[in-house]
Length: 582
Image (cartoon, rainbow, N blue to C red; front, side, top):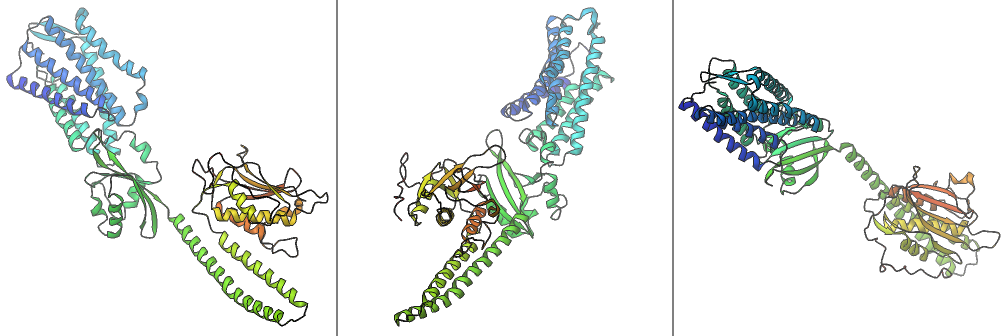
């Protein structure tokens, strides 16, 4: 390197490069909280320091001050090179390599070079001869080391550029070109014919390309750190749309979804991609009408998708675009459609039963009443009336089976104790008593859960009160906790009656199964249908007192919501009717 001042053109180039570094540093400082911004800021700082020191060395005479600037120049080279490596590792998704021991090891060489430049033992770094600097072995070792780091940086960025598929692959191209410009500018001085360090010319080009990456491609606003490892493994379709409604990125699932629309959709506007699907385009517009997160079920041909959108903001809380995640729900929608059709058929069946069977019963009941009014002493009239009552009961139970089996979609927190009291009050309980062992809010349909409890109370009163020792029937309602051995939380209804023989327990929930000649066999079947509609499992066992115990598990906690049936003040027990009264 010549000790004489450089030409005015070279000095002007150095000054322009220094100013460019200051401007880039200001932009990066405003984005310093974004991923990758800080190491990139370190690179720009190192390059600017290198340039300023080089300009100073052109304008001052050799001496202690020049030696200080030379040491700072090498410090800038070391900081800029290492910062560029750190940035590249983050940018390409290899941030796991940035552990403290590795960062400490990377810092050793720049520090040693600065110290050796100041001390320069035996001319290891440089020697001065006739106003010309001759570089020593330490300089060439440092140069080889720096070039090795630049080679790693270049390979990593080039590899990332090849596999990058987003619109912002322009970031990678700009970074690669800027790195090559720096390398070539320095190589022209170290190995070329010129005795003036033209590296700042490379820095000027690098600064321009970095500015393009920052301003045009919004580098550090949308840095693709670890993108492939996250988005490419997601089974949902993921799309990124910028603030101009351009599709700037999509994962493989999203690209396959758009393949039928556009073979290369990246960079196209959403409106142009959906030009042939105006209804879907309007749905997307409605979904993005506000800046808040939103979701909507959308039909695309014969398929259905649940689309969620989340706004993306930059480091200054400005709207930068939107993230869309589309999950296919076609199978779920088809199941829902089949369920709706089944419900419609059940409703039709229930209407037929209600209308076509009850009308003849009403007519028969009218003739029976006329016969009684005629003082007909026929004893068969009582049997006919009992048959009519039984048929009415059967119709009610069949209607309940048809309607109670529908899935519960509007569950709400229900206080089990309060609802048990309500069900108890609607049943002729005689001398039986109700005990609430424990209670907690559970999510359920209040009306259907009350029907379930009423049927269980009826079953216990009809079949469990035949104890030979004359003990009064006692029915207990309580909650079940998660046992930890695979049994989920739930609730139970138990009695101290005669119980259910083990051989019959597997059939008690079957439709039409009964051990009472006057029973319909639908009471416990309705209980099972209501439980299934809630997503619960039903089981029957022996209670602690030898009676019957019905357990219902799979009940999710209702949280802290106010139970729908908690119509009493907090810390008060709901009033319970006198069990001795019907």
